[in-house]
Image: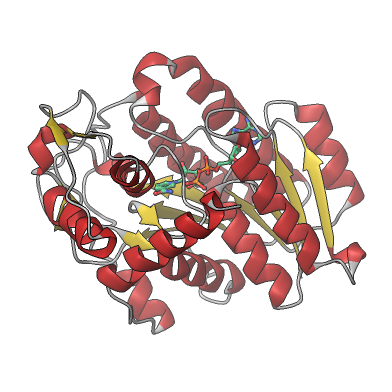
Length: 329
Ligand SMILES: NC(=O)c1ccc[n+]([C@@H]2O[C@H](COP(=O)([O-])OP(=O)(O)OC[C@H]3O[C@@H](n4cnc5c(N)ncnc54)[C@H](O)[C@@H]3O)[C@@H](O)[C@H]2O)c1
């Protein structure tokens, strides 16, 4: 297949592309390489993708483009006929959205509209996009199921993700575009994001610096290992036979591990692996943060007969192993 992956210099996009290239698909990657976090990390990920296709250059293309630039995106759709679009480019991060809401409107609203509208106009058979567990916002009912209420997002990031789902429904309903929204729950693993807990904690603990712990470490997250997120994304993206001709071709799936853990427990695993005690600076719950996320992912597990085999301890260890190796270079 020929697949457009937006945000492919990012954490999830990089892993998705790696898997697609390894299995023989052709990938067109697109990213604006913004400076939200260390751009060298993004460039290192892109270098690996290039290496995979060193002997088959015509299977991987990269464009440094901002998705808010409709004309440039349109040129890509004119040049390549895609079998799938996996749309991951977005301004991520809950906390950053408190200070920079306008970036979220530009990338997650205008950018999202450009990509889905072009996917529809160019008759792409399946449009897959990243939503987020944050859409569950103030919903107190756990675990979160796909049909749970998502009308109360706690910040602009969550509001943009919820609106992506609404836009996708309109395109599915109006034009029959097959859409699948994936509500990711806190993904972690090698090549992870420097703004996320595991990266920040590991970095600071190793440097003997204090770590900042919000809500005194009492909130829970349904941490999802990157390999599971990638496997499930590709299973969902590949399959279109389950879209019924009689119903609006619109699907939403949770992608989580169904096993939330307290932040303090998560930190204690990092301490155990590093064999260093963390020095913690405790704070109250940060504005906009959710107290807990807990996924019921049985809908996607059942659909694709998928089981999570690995455990958090081993997966955190894999991140730390990667982090040490990456920093030593
Ligand atoms: N990682 C998680 O835990 C998580 C959880 C829920 C949802 N998500 C969603 O999954 C997707 C991927 O997340 P990630 O963790 O890989 O984030 P990331 O920040 O590592 O990747 C996003 C990539 O998109 C690019 N990008 C941002 N704005 C762009 C624009 N306007 N034009 C072109 N490129 C742009 C960035 O440069 C970055 O490389 C995002 O949509 C995010 O909101 C991630």
